[in-house]
Amino acid sequence: MKRINLALQGGGAHGAFTWGVLNRLLQDDDIEIAAISGTSAGALNAAALKSGWVANGRAGALANLDWLWNQIGAVTDPQFTPWIGAASPTAELWAKALKYSPAYTAFDMTTRMFSPYVYGPAMQNPLAKIVKKFHYDAVCAGTGPALHICATNVRSGKIRVFTGDEIMPEVIMASACLPSLFQAVEFEDPQTGTVEAFWDGGYTGNPALFPLFANDLPDDLLIVNINPLYREELPMDSQSIENRVNEISFNSSLLRELRAIEFVKRLLADGSIKRGTMKDVLVHMIADDALMNALNVATKTIPTPVILARLKEAGEAAADAFLAQHKKDIGKRSSVNLTEMFN
Image 1 (cartoon, rainbow, N blue to C red):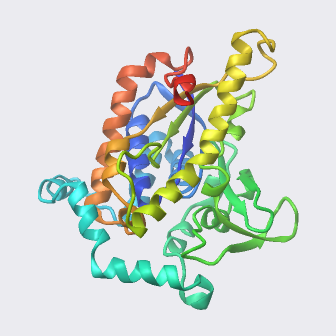
Image 2: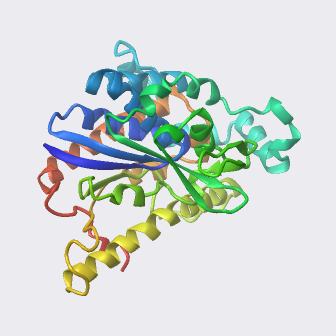
């Protein structure tokens, strides 16, 4: 049995890529998921997997993830999904059409010009109805994968990781709260007993890796990355510039933690610190930067069945390739060269 921890990034509707990755991993009986850290869309995927797993193991997790993305806008009926992709244009053409559509242009201009507080309660996050349907007795259960969800405290600017009984609908909504679109999510923090305001966790941990360093968890950390680390094309229009700024800022916390892991691994390798003093984390990553470079902020913001289907398919393919190439590395060595990443 290959035991792993999962770190699931946020990225709006692009989280359907993670849906595909999880779908493939859950079908491999040799893979055991010990713990999950998720932010924004990653938190939604993590909560759906956990509650489904507690209810009915792998089959329950698979079914619950399908239910989640069906609620968001994906077509999950196997009779219809094949022709959706076959009869539609490429992901890049679809992304450009959506980006320059009058409806999205009007939406983008409105969010740039007005604060979400202008609209009062009228501007509600559409995910709220979905999040409230999760079975929180299962999401918070002590069985199944340990679950950690990240949000950003607005006033302090610090990361807040919720786990166990702390997780409730407001926590998941906070983890997915983009401040340009929605009002901060306010609720009583079980840790402080005071009412705190939270924004998207991506600003401080996308996702947070440190909760997965516990001694009782496996050494292997698999990151599902949906915000491209590298873009060849220089962004020149306002939407592309804003999108790249968001990608960089949402990747910065992840890169910071990976750099710390790389530093500890070097200290362990040269004997500067004794083995066992600090955890020698084995890092793996699943991503598809080529696809994510073809998409844009519009496909991230507005879920469409075509793009969701393409993302899920790409996630399954990427996970399949990872298992074929690196399943043997789990428990033995990292499949990501962190030294090369930072040089």
